[in-house]
Length: 439
Image (cartoon, rainbow, N blue to C red):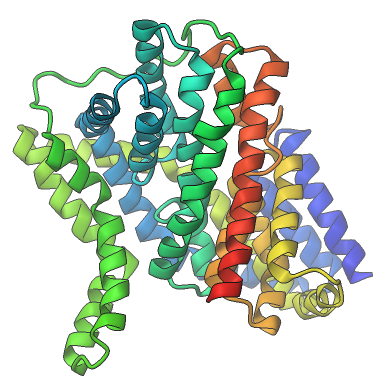
């Protein structure tokens, strides 16, 4: 009976979000409370479970996501993202322009949220399309594939960071493994796949004009733009690798490395440096920079609430005792836990349309199995991230953004965007499974 309740709860969650268009956080909250009642949690204990669920997941990652949003907003509004894009286009030339745009999307996508990166980079794609008379989908898809992969696989993006917290994974190792998985996924879904799309015709950009860079401030230079945007990645990799290289470090040195390597401290250090390099140094006042940070927090408020809602659902499952029963049941299936996690996330993504909701919901279902089987939590984060990118279609906002920006037919959007996301997802899973054999 408990399994039926969970299935019905997931189905209700999907229906509320996709059919009735109820806000994802409210859907999580309503479904979690109903599931808790149906699973026999005493009514007087339900508020405590709700509060514990929110606190348990948000305590570890609120700072990371908020600081990451601030950095991304500053990278965009300072002109650093545009500078990175211009440099990459100049370096690769028209013959290999796809590769330049792909790398640009990857670099810019690390600090920027997907929607911001999309709006920022699409005008660049069309400026190249019009200048060199090239097919828009063929040129643009590699860049958008890179943006999608960073959104689904790599910290400091909200979904991967939340999954790292939920599975008690190591954010540095997840980032390193994620980079190894992301590169082949982007290449196959981007430059390789897009070669089959040269005949797809697109119209001009008609929506979402890119915000102009304020010319009263100086634009950061090339090195400044690259280093400021990617500093969190380099810091996380460095502090993760150092203990392996210098295994005999003194306890005091180890404690310092652990402090600096804490994700929230890494993001704070990167933000402080960027405040100067992309803000004050370019002529902005502290007040101007703080206004940018304030707007960044407004942009991610709903993302934080969705993650909080997923934490409530997870806590209800734990407090009801169904988590262990579910783990025992799933463990009997002849499917590897990494594949099972990917499959659950993929199905939810296909039904709901949101990669973040899909990954976090699947995490609540698969978590007890991860604990019991001892599967590598870093790889499970990546498996769920890959699954959450599968089955992008008409209920996905990204699908419609791509369709409307490129002025495509529904058929051509499915042939290009949806297939690209499927390739990214499947190659990501294969990469995770290969890593599970090696490590």
